[in-house]
Image 1 (cartoon, rainbow, N blue to C red):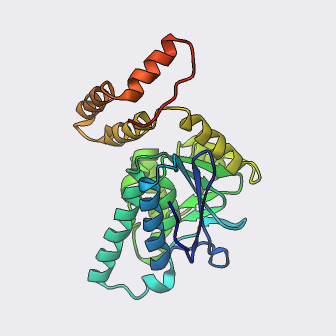
Image 2 (cartoon, one colour):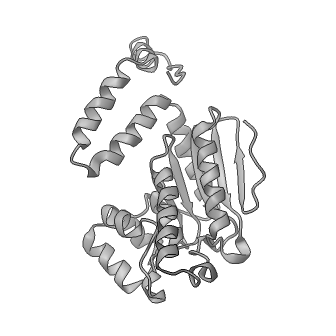
Length: 261
């Protein structure tokens, strides 16, 4: 699959099936504007459609920020109608990341504020660098998080801590983010991306259908239908060629050759 030329994103893939998406506005601390969000949406579509991509890693360009927030100039022009529309549009894009059938790893390499924190939370796994700062400061602008932050943060860290972070608008450093379960691990800046790639490589060894179904099942864990969803997906996998290959390979003491069907 050929990839389009992005203005604000760098999008590359390797032979192993790992795609690296870098938000590339370092002079603006990679702030999200409408164009970045549109390109991000396109990149997620490409990830879903490409058979060559098995895992997606998202990070920010430069040494200071993952994504330092939304474009304040664009925000300042919103009214009730356009504000609700903008929030819904951002939510839909970040929902697509959360619901992506392929694992998405966020490498939070600096400031992840506002929309940046919300983007990180939409990823399935988050690796932070030692200088990472994660927060939702929207109340300092007279707003609330609008791209899913009020919903995802309580699920990740609990209602009380989420309330504290959202109502004070104060960020947390990497070590506190790990303690509260907001990030999975902390690595030095020059090691974080390599660690994410090691995780991706470990995932790629497994059945692609199993990975996508596992993501779907875990995402359903907040629903009252979560257990039924798990059973349904488990049953579907029992009729796949990958399941037959995986169990046969185990019994025959060899590595499985999964084909995604």
